Length: 286
Image 1 (cartoon, rainbow, N blue to C red):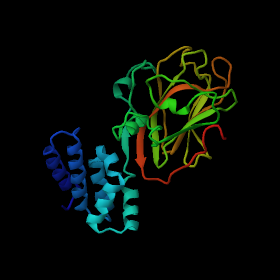
Image 2: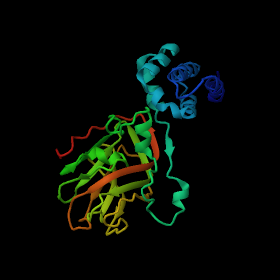
Image 3: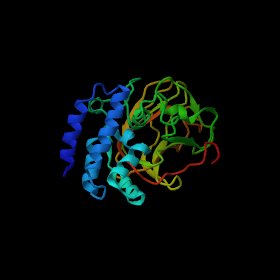
Image 4: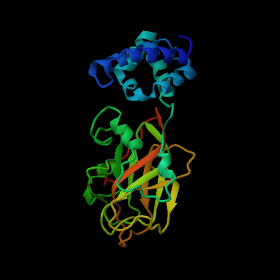
């Protein structure tokens, strides 16, 4: 095959021959199909290779499995060093996980208790696992301090689980996407159903966990009502991708405390793979 479009045609014909995509035998067939297709594409042809991965982007999680990648390298007789370079390039092909257009047209920031699946949800479901992305080790959730619950609790809309930092100024909670980067277009949060919702805070990004860029600033923002269990979403303007995104409290909450009390945090935008992993210290050790 001389082009990604030709490979894509073969892929589509092969997939139509699979019985059921949810059947374990069919998934194995898809794995073999992908190995075969990618074997036709020279790994040093970065443009074609990246284009083909984008065509098969719904199989990112399958393709990134080491045994699948190893088979591709073997069939192409590619050395590990060259394979690593091509893999890094290929998996930087971005995915756009959009915030729903119909909600952007609604003249309110809250979409109630409706779960709008974004990047964190996508990563959790990428391997068909019912656990959250943090509990699977795909991402890391960390925070400055902990007084109630676990920071991992903010990765799932349901069941509602509490998380709260200590009442220290400039408290924060962060999601580390490890070897991935996110360029956010929107983000959603849900606070606890009490009198302590956020009022002044920043959404910030970093690529080393040390140096931070303010993406969106909220000052005396009364959007989140007390005792609300609704999810609230804000659009952001951001032209850079980050490995770590955090909520930094810059002023006291609605009950005049310095604590952050969240039960949900989600992002939407462009997700890119294949970067050097960022390691953040465990929660409560900052």
